[in-house]
Image (cartoon, rainbow, N blue to C red; front, side, top):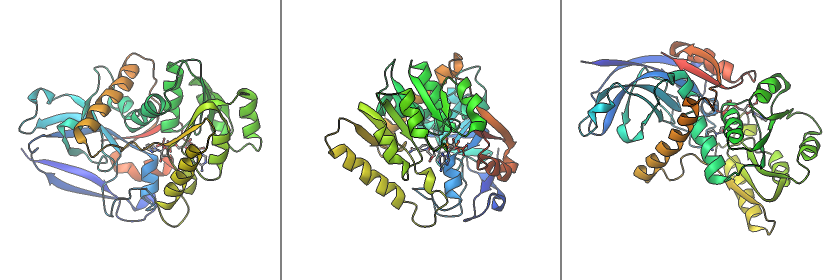
Length: 341
Ligand SMILES: NC(=O)c1ccc[n+]([C@@H]2O[C@H](COP(=O)([O-])OP(=O)(O)OC[C@H]3O[C@@H](n4cnc5c(N)ncnc54)[C@H](OP(=O)(O)O)[C@@H]3O)[C@@H](O)[C@H]2O)c1
């Protein structure tokens, strides 16, 4: 049986309307592979950077975007447990997710628990892994602590808030005022990131400093994020969203940021900084995938038992990826924009 994949292509530096659609016949799964029929994929901040040529690890154009995917295993290749066929699975892909069908390494897929919908699971693949690892592996949060989450309405941000709350941590979350009710509903205290006295407001809420700051914005504000830390606190930096629209190197802003973090770590200030990268350790594939299965498994369990609420901001058919990307970039969104077949 031949399978035809329909996929969305980013042909070069284009506006969202410049995305193209193409179809091609997909091969049978090779040894160690599974063929997955996509049920849900999504728009991440990475695609907003990639269409500007501004993603740190920018792929060469043209390519199929799509950082993560949820779907059903349609066929298994030689050496793969045939029981995987028919299972709903999730995968972190970085690119390639915006496709009706994909060939994936069987080791790289994570089963989605029974009763969890594809769209709900999709909101927590890259977002869930990123948030869980930053909270539990990098900052090592403990109950009773207070943390600051920048962009608490975003895909990663809203997941950070929920996972931190589930771990008994108090959360202060920055967001535009239009999202304050949503951020409050997740259990965080919302503050407007454009308020001139933002940092005074944070200090009033946490006079002794916060135990961790999760900062994906970078730029000049990273200094303030560091200053907010209580002794023993951790600044987890994981992006430079503030430089998305600047021309120039996609790597320089990140490298400059990492240099600054290393400098702060070298100083005797009882505070720690770290740049989180979800792909750290990927060269050791077996270990990387085992860690991913464990961490995403934890997140999915919390989704299945109702501790986490999936934040589906909007749903678009894959064919309307341009409109989905446009919406994701509008600054009006709370949660994850999901693409379905
Ligand atoms: N290091 C890693 O491994 C890793 C992995 C995954 C994601 N990330 C990073 O995580 C971040 C969030 O990704 P996402 O997919 O969750 O994005 P998203 O859903 O689009 O959310 C982005 C959030 O950032 C806010 N924001 C955007 N630009 C900002 C700016 N200049 N100043 C202040 N706030 C700003 C947005 O606020 P408004 O809604 O008000 O615009 C929104 O709350 C991105 O920077 C991404 O690169 C890093």
